[in-house]
Amino acid sequence: MGGGSDLQRLSGGENCVLGMVTGVMAKACNYPFLVWKNTVQQGLKISLDPRIVYRGLPMACLNLGGTNAVQFGSTGVFQRLLATTGVSQDAVTVGGSFLGGAASGVPCSIWELCMIQQQRFGGSILGTPARFVNEYGTSALSRGVTMTVGREAMFTMSMLGITPLIQQRLVESSGVEKNTALAIGARSEALTLTLTLTRTLTTLTLTLTLTRRSLEPSSPARSRTRWTRSRRACRAT
Image 1 (tube, rainbow, N blue to C red):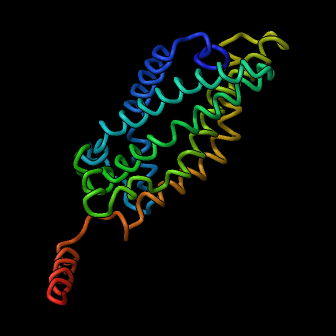
Image 2: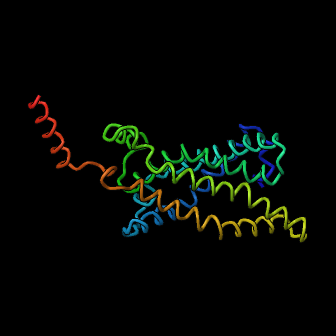
Image 3: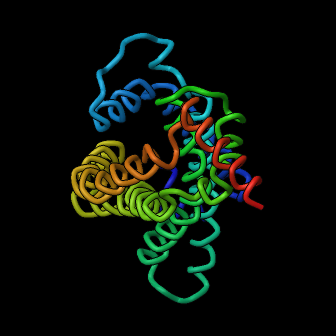
Protein backbone atom coordinates (compact mmCIF):
# COMPACT_ATOMS: atom_id res chain seq x y z
CA MET A 1 0.00 0.00 0.00
CA GLY A 2 1.03 3.64 -0.25
CA GLY A 3 2.30 3.93 3.27
CA GLY A 4 4.76 2.49 5.74
CA SER A 5 8.23 2.39 4.24
CA ASP A 6 6.89 2.60 0.67
CA LEU A 7 6.95 6.40 0.64
CA GLN A 8 10.68 6.41 1.38
CA ARG A 9 11.31 4.61 -1.91
CA LEU A 10 9.37 7.13 -4.02
CA SER A 11 10.57 10.56 -5.09
CA GLY A 12 8.98 13.71 -3.69
CA GLY A 13 7.13 14.34 -6.93
CA GLU A 14 5.80 10.77 -7.09
CA ASN A 15 4.53 11.00 -3.52
CA CYS A 16 2.79 14.32 -4.21
CA VAL A 17 1.08 13.00 -7.35
CA LEU A 18 0.02 9.83 -5.53
CA GLY A 19 -1.51 11.84 -2.70
CA MET A 20 -3.22 14.36 -4.98
CA VAL A 21 -4.86 11.74 -7.19
CA THR A 22 -6.16 9.69 -4.27
CA GLY A 23 -7.39 12.82 -2.48
CA VAL A 24 -9.35 14.18 -5.43
CA MET A 25 -10.90 10.81 -6.21
CA ALA A 26 -11.92 10.24 -2.59
CA LYS A 27 -13.48 13.67 -2.21
CA ALA A 28 -15.39 13.39 -5.48
CA CYS A 29 -16.99 10.22 -4.09
CA ASN A 30 -17.73 11.17 -0.48
CA TYR A 31 -18.40 14.90 -0.74
CA PRO A 32 -22.19 14.72 -0.12
CA PHE A 33 -21.56 12.86 3.14
CA LEU A 34 -19.11 15.57 4.23
CA VAL A 35 -21.66 18.28 3.48
CA TRP A 36 -24.40 16.45 5.38
CA LYS A 37 -22.06 15.85 8.34
CA ASN A 38 -21.22 19.55 8.56
CA THR A 39 -24.91 20.42 8.19
CA VAL A 40 -25.92 18.14 11.08
CA GLN A 41 -23.12 19.47 13.30
CA GLN A 42 -24.44 23.01 12.73
CA GLY A 43 -27.99 21.98 13.60
CA LEU A 44 -29.28 22.76 10.11
CA LYS A 45 -31.72 20.87 7.91
CA ILE A 46 -30.20 18.40 5.45
CA SER A 47 -30.77 19.37 1.82
CA LEU A 48 -30.93 17.02 -1.17
CA ASP A 49 -30.73 19.84 -3.70
CA PRO A 50 -27.61 19.14 -5.82
CA ARG A 51 -26.98 22.87 -6.13
CA ILE A 52 -26.52 23.01 -2.35
CA VAL A 53 -25.05 19.56 -1.76
CA TYR A 54 -22.25 20.06 -4.30
CA ARG A 55 -21.61 23.70 -3.48
CA GLY A 56 -17.90 24.07 -2.76
CA LEU A 57 -16.87 20.80 -4.47
CA PRO A 58 -13.93 22.31 -6.44
CA MET A 59 -12.47 23.79 -3.26
CA ALA A 60 -13.06 20.48 -1.48
CA CYS A 61 -11.12 18.62 -4.19
CA LEU A 62 -8.34 21.20 -3.94
CA ASN A 63 -8.44 20.81 -0.17
CA LEU A 64 -8.14 17.03 0.06
CA GLY A 65 -6.02 16.65 -3.09
CA GLY A 66 -3.59 19.32 -1.95
CA THR A 67 -3.58 18.12 1.65
CA ASN A 68 -2.89 14.53 0.64
CA ALA A 69 -0.15 15.69 -1.71
CA VAL A 70 1.55 17.54 1.15
CA GLN A 71 0.99 14.58 3.50
CA PHE A 72 2.48 11.98 1.17
CA GLY A 73 5.34 14.22 0.06
CA SER A 74 6.23 15.48 3.56
CA THR A 75 5.92 12.02 5.10
CA GLY A 76 8.44 10.63 2.62
CA VAL A 77 10.84 13.50 3.38
CA PHE A 78 10.53 13.16 7.16
CA GLN A 79 10.87 9.39 7.03
CA ARG A 80 14.09 9.68 5.06
CA LEU A 81 15.40 12.22 7.59
CA LEU A 82 14.45 10.08 10.59
CA ALA A 83 16.05 7.02 8.97
CA THR A 84 19.44 8.77 9.26
CA THR A 85 19.12 9.18 13.04
CA GLY A 86 19.43 5.49 13.87
CA VAL A 87 15.95 5.00 15.35
CA SER A 88 13.93 1.85 14.65
CA GLN A 89 12.02 1.43 11.40
CA ASP A 90 8.72 1.52 13.28
CA ALA A 91 9.63 4.89 14.79
CA VAL A 92 10.63 6.14 11.35
CA THR A 93 7.30 5.04 9.86
CA VAL A 94 5.06 6.44 12.60
CA GLY A 95 7.10 9.56 13.38
CA GLY A 96 7.54 10.53 9.74
CA SER A 97 3.83 10.19 9.04
CA PHE A 98 2.97 12.23 12.14
CA LEU A 99 5.27 15.08 11.10
CA GLY A 100 4.07 14.90 7.50
CA GLY A 101 0.48 15.22 8.66
CA ALA A 102 1.31 18.17 10.90
CA ALA A 103 2.96 19.96 7.97
CA SER A 104 -0.16 19.46 5.85
CA GLY A 105 -2.39 21.01 8.50
CA VAL A 106 -1.28 24.57 7.72
CA PRO A 107 -2.44 24.78 4.07
CA CYS A 108 -5.35 22.43 4.85
CA SER A 109 -6.65 24.90 7.43
CA ILE A 110 -6.97 27.68 4.83
CA TRP A 111 -8.51 25.44 2.17
CA GLU A 112 -10.98 23.91 4.61
CA LEU A 113 -11.96 27.31 5.94
CA CYS A 114 -12.89 28.41 2.42
CA MET A 115 -14.67 25.12 1.70
CA ILE A 116 -16.83 25.27 4.83
CA GLN A 117 -17.74 28.89 4.23
CA GLN A 118 -18.73 28.06 0.65
CA GLN A 119 -20.90 25.19 1.87
CA ARG A 120 -22.67 27.49 4.30
CA PHE A 121 -22.86 30.82 2.48
CA GLY A 122 -21.84 30.23 -1.15
CA GLY A 123 -19.21 32.29 -2.95
CA SER A 124 -16.36 31.58 -5.35
CA ILE A 125 -12.97 29.93 -4.80
CA LEU A 126 -11.09 33.23 -5.06
CA GLY A 127 -13.83 35.49 -3.75
CA THR A 128 -14.22 33.71 -0.41
CA PRO A 129 -10.63 34.18 0.89
CA ALA A 130 -10.52 37.66 -0.64
CA ARG A 131 -13.57 38.61 1.44
CA PHE A 132 -11.85 37.40 4.60
CA VAL A 133 -8.76 39.47 3.94
CA ASN A 134 -10.72 42.61 2.96
CA GLU A 135 -13.14 42.53 5.90
CA TYR A 136 -11.18 40.88 8.71
CA GLY A 137 -7.51 40.93 7.75
CA THR A 138 -5.16 38.08 6.90
CA SER A 139 -5.41 36.68 10.45
CA ALA A 140 -8.91 35.39 9.61
CA LEU A 141 -7.34 32.83 7.27
CA SER A 142 -5.55 31.17 10.19
CA ARG A 143 -8.71 30.52 12.17
CA GLY A 144 -8.74 26.91 13.40
CA VAL A 145 -5.19 26.18 12.25
CA THR A 146 -4.12 24.63 15.58
CA MET A 147 -6.98 22.12 15.58
CA THR A 148 -6.36 21.30 11.91
CA VAL A 149 -2.65 20.66 12.44
CA GLY A 150 -3.44 18.32 15.34
CA ARG A 151 -6.16 16.51 13.41
CA GLU A 152 -4.08 15.97 10.27
CA ALA A 153 -1.06 14.83 12.30
CA MET A 154 -3.12 12.15 14.07
CA PHE A 155 -4.97 11.13 10.91
CA THR A 156 -1.83 10.80 8.77
CA MET A 157 -0.03 8.91 11.51
CA SER A 158 -2.94 6.45 11.52
CA MET A 159 -3.24 6.20 7.73
CA LEU A 160 0.40 6.10 6.64
CA GLY A 161 2.05 4.88 9.84
CA ILE A 162 -0.02 2.65 12.11
CA THR A 163 -2.17 0.93 9.48
CA PRO A 164 0.83 -0.36 7.44
CA LEU A 165 2.46 -1.61 10.65
CA ILE A 166 -0.66 -3.55 11.65
CA GLN A 167 -0.80 -4.99 8.14
CA GLN A 168 2.85 -6.02 8.30
CA ARG A 169 2.50 -7.69 11.72
CA LEU A 170 -0.59 -9.64 10.68
CA VAL A 171 1.08 -10.92 7.51
CA GLU A 172 4.28 -11.92 9.30
CA SER A 173 2.80 -13.47 12.45
CA SER A 174 -0.52 -14.92 11.32
CA GLY A 175 -0.05 -15.52 7.62
CA VAL A 176 -3.08 -13.39 6.81
CA GLU A 177 -3.46 -12.43 3.14
CA LYS A 178 -1.96 -8.99 2.50
CA ASN A 179 -5.13 -7.21 1.38
CA THR A 180 -7.12 -8.76 4.23
CA ALA A 181 -4.49 -7.60 6.70
CA LEU A 182 -4.68 -4.11 5.21
CA ALA A 183 -8.45 -4.04 5.69
CA ILE A 184 -8.12 -5.19 9.30
CA GLY A 185 -5.44 -2.60 9.99
CA ALA A 186 -7.47 0.20 8.43
CA ARG A 187 -10.58 -0.76 10.41
CA SER A 188 -8.62 -1.03 13.65
CA GLU A 189 -7.15 2.43 13.41
CA ALA A 190 -10.45 3.87 12.17
CA LEU A 191 -12.21 2.60 15.30
CA THR A 192 -9.55 4.04 17.60
CA LEU A 193 -7.70 7.21 16.65
CA THR A 194 -9.71 8.31 13.62
CA LEU A 195 -13.13 8.07 15.28
CA THR A 196 -12.03 9.45 18.64
CA LEU A 197 -9.28 12.06 18.62
CA THR A 198 -9.58 13.24 15.02
CA ARG A 199 -13.38 13.35 15.27
CA THR A 200 -13.14 15.73 18.24
CA LEU A 201 -10.61 17.95 16.48
CA THR A 202 -12.76 18.01 13.33
CA THR A 203 -15.76 19.25 15.29
CA LEU A 204 -13.67 21.95 16.97
CA THR A 205 -12.29 23.03 13.59
CA LEU A 206 -15.79 23.34 12.16
CA THR A 207 -16.89 25.38 15.17
CA LEU A 208 -13.96 27.78 14.86
CA THR A 209 -14.35 28.27 11.11
CA LEU A 210 -18.07 29.03 11.41
CA THR A 211 -18.06 31.51 14.28
CA ARG A 212 -20.91 33.75 13.22
CA ARG A 213 -19.63 37.00 14.64
CA SER A 214 -16.22 36.90 12.97
CA LEU A 215 -16.77 35.17 9.62
CA GLU A 216 -20.39 35.41 8.57
CA PRO A 217 -20.89 37.72 5.55
CA SER A 218 -21.81 41.22 6.62
CA SER A 219 -25.46 42.20 6.38
CA PRO A 220 -26.45 45.51 4.73
CA ALA A 221 -27.44 46.88 8.13
CA ARG A 222 -24.04 46.01 9.60
CA SER A 223 -22.27 47.58 6.63
CA ARG A 224 -24.29 50.81 7.06
CA THR A 225 -23.42 50.85 10.75
CA ARG A 226 -19.70 50.59 10.02
CA TRP A 227 -20.03 53.30 7.36
CA THR A 228 -21.81 55.64 9.80
CA ARG A 229 -19.16 55.07 12.45
CA SER A 230 -16.41 55.81 9.93
CA ARG A 231 -18.05 59.08 8.92
CA ARG A 232 -18.42 60.12 12.55
CA ALA A 233 -14.80 59.33 13.23
CA CYS A 234 -13.72 61.46 10.25
CA ARG A 235 -15.83 64.36 11.41
CA ALA A 236 -14.42 64.12 14.91
CA THR A 237 -10.90 64.52 13.58
